[in-house]
Length: 271
Image (cartoon, rainbow, N blue to C red; front, side):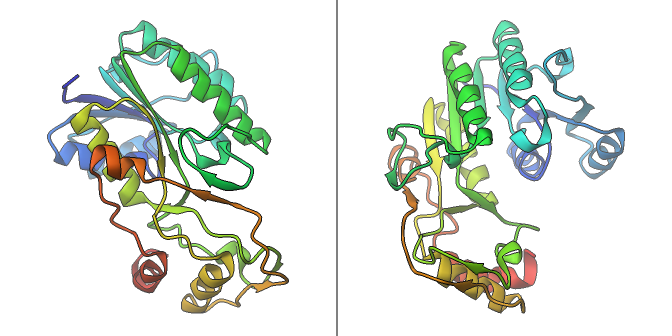
């Protein structure tokens, strides 16, 4: 389905730069924020994007102005106390109101467990939040949209999300686990590729580079001038996210491939 009319529910850290990229690419973009202050700020920055104030919950009906043939939901679970109920309501409204292509931003936390995880790996969520994401994913798949996508990004890095600050100076275990991270620009790039090709289904998103936690976070803290974490052992009991599908099926090429090289560049501009 080809259309240039799109709505983004959640113009936050990911949704707003995505909206600006879509607008620059010729899309008519509308989206939601949760406060009038934020609405005024974004409307001043990019008046061509239709910013509306709306708060998701299980009783809230989405305003008519926020329905579009293409819809992207970027609301993270930490933003709502009853996340599944609110997202279930939103997804059902979207289906009833004729949304043709729904994209839901989930997370690779739905896998849990260890070993290599691709899009066919059984879901074993290990936290309440991850289990809630699985419920929303199931709701999206069962709603019978003409086209739907579930994107599962790994840990998000990019502007104002420099890694390592919360680990600085701590003593940690499992330094041999690898990191699974993806840059904001690659999440946006993958979405643009999906829209250009109208490819349905599930896609993981993660940089192809997976250094160990010890190497990555010690270097991140060193470059930021912070005390380095200490790792008591080098056990590797974690998972590796296989996110090659976006490259093999969509032809999208990750922009941030070498995470250690990105750290060198990010210390100046992305903290």
